[in-house]
Image (cartoon, rainbow, N blue to C red; front, side, top):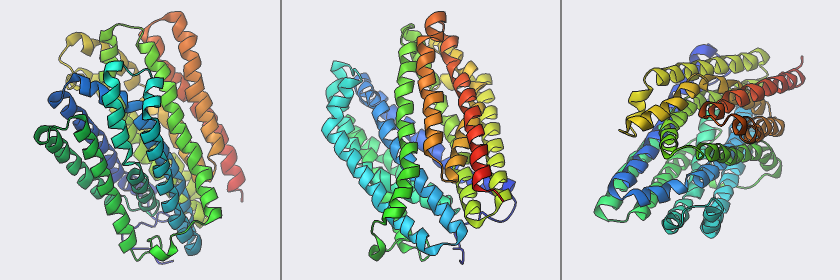
Length: 448
């Protein structure tokens, strides 16, 4: 199969160099999403008011759950596209891409209806404060109108990443992010729409990114390009996508449920500690999203080389991606420890809140890198077509374990360090189990 000019053949060349170059656009793309989300919060907080900020903030768990499911579903698209592309299997590649577009669109539509019809129920279930409920429901209903677009963008991003093209999704996301910021200011400052304006800006930017990525795929003459005539569901390919993607999507959703128990633990302390924790958690997205770029690289490189039958490059792609993700996580974490007060001052000028935030940053900053052993290994198993068992391991080790920790270890010591230490223990236990499972899968799948 002749390789397209804007894709990369991930089955050849120096892996250390190519994995890094592949991941850099993904890092910038992920960081842009974090920065644009922070811009949304800043616009609401500064120009609308604290109640509006609280209303938008009250939807964070649900928004993260919905978007996390779509991102997880797209991991199945990424793995299968990379596999068929690396194997030169044109027929199954085309069936996978066209089926995936419809599956991701359908998932977005389902989440749209769930969000619009059940937003009030979900928010009451999360004990949203009464004074915030009406605007929170309104914001969530409008935001969920963009779910089909979010599903389609993640589909396109997964396809391009699988064939080695991470630059175009970065460009499309940059364009939509700029529109998001501009529309935020226009709707809030000029049109005086408040929470409604922020939600409208979000969905407009989502539809722009979806349009750009779909237009590129329909214009493409490459083997992974879309055509209207070929848009149909292929049941075997749909089954493969759901088999890999749904467990990953559910994992994202369950993580939010587990983390809500951690928040309950934080809420037992003073309001100053709660505020410090909230400020410090902004570091999580920055570090995790940088590390996540290498997990995507791991899936794409392993998938193509697995399809091409390059056993050694499959193994080396995992080890190199793991090394990069661990290294970046460790360095960024230590930088946050050393410059944490400056970082926290971006969100608060209260010295007591900064002191409280440093309690979290000091522990988490030393631990971020170790999450790579869990997440990168999970991505590696999925690249070999195994998704259910890695998801079960993650749910038990990083979700159920955290809930048990909150009600046992933390309940006994009743200190903030005893709460934050649950992360490194859960990552260590889950990472070890994931590695044992991956070794078994690797030996069975790629046995000579």
